Amino acid sequence: MSRNTKINLLLLALVAALAVLPLALGLGDHKKEPFTGADAEAESAITEIEPDYEPWFSPLYEPPSGEIESALFSLQAALGAGVLAYYFGLRRGRRQGEARALARRETAKTPAESGADEV
Amino acid sequence: MHIAEGFLPPAHAIAWGVASAPFVVHGVRSLTREVREHPESTLLLGASGAFTFVLSALKLPSVTGSCSHPTGTGLGAILFRPPIMAVLGTITLLFQALLLAHGGLTTLGANVFSMAIVGPWVGYAVYKLLRRYDVPLMVAVFFGAFFADLSTYCVTSVQLALAFPDPSSGFLGALGKFGSIFAVTQLPLAVSEGLLTVLVMRLLVQSSKGELTRLGVLVAGKRDTTTEAVAR
Image (cartoon, rainbow over all chains, first blue to last red; front, side, top):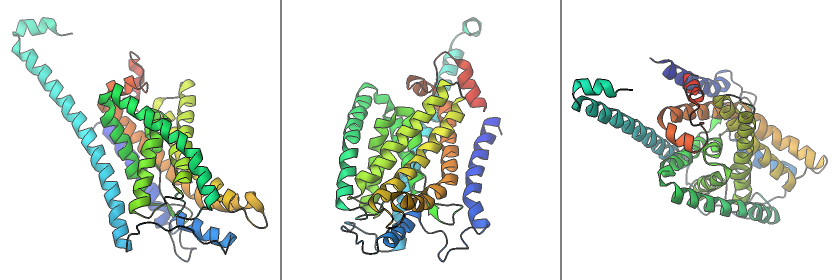
């Protein structure tokens, strides 16, 4: 494994550790409902400060259940990951293609010539 | 950082919308110019938008015992400058507001302001400042992404505190309350976002040197910068 790949894997491992540690250390145990969204917590903080506040507009479409909502969230992540993977795959393929074309051009020449041409 | 639908009083919702609109309009212009002058950058633009899509869908647990998500706006801001990120961020927020009931149309202006305008600009400024003092590329990228993420959540806290000042302790009291919900939760996530942005930038340095040179992220002819960045 190249040094580059090792560093990349280390970066991913660090991110995974940062995500897992709060769970493993039970940092949500002091809460009635551990690991809820900060957005929802802000909503309850608003109702704490202003108990009479009523949201004056509601979403045009609301996912009918938590399952549908998580499906749509995965769809969002999958779309993004798909485009990213396409980008890096395309780049890699192009680089390999260029390298191969270059190598073919080298071998097409006579051996003596290609030796002289090489920089 | 998504302020939920209807959770900002109408006056605030309109004010943030008015504040955000010129940035988004200017961004659309920059984006069309970029695509027209450099059609080859469309792919990388798509990848930058895709990065925001992935990261803002990742809800991660944090030290406060609650969950939040990164924003992914630092990468695009560093690559294409903040105006273009205003558009890509707005698209992401619209997707979430319309399909996921996450955020909302009435709060879109406020959410765009924090995630698609202030975040990218702060991240870009930090990145540029560090680069001016010859800080290595990947260190500058890390802190750029870190502060893009964190500043977004600070702005959200300010927006909510302005709309809902605490009856006894006023604006500052409310800011402390919302800040402890958002900003503290966000600290480790901002670190994660910094690390992931560095990862993607490392892959870009490997795969798209020409593109990065044209965008000014890598300096042409200065071989040591690129090789150093790859080696790190």
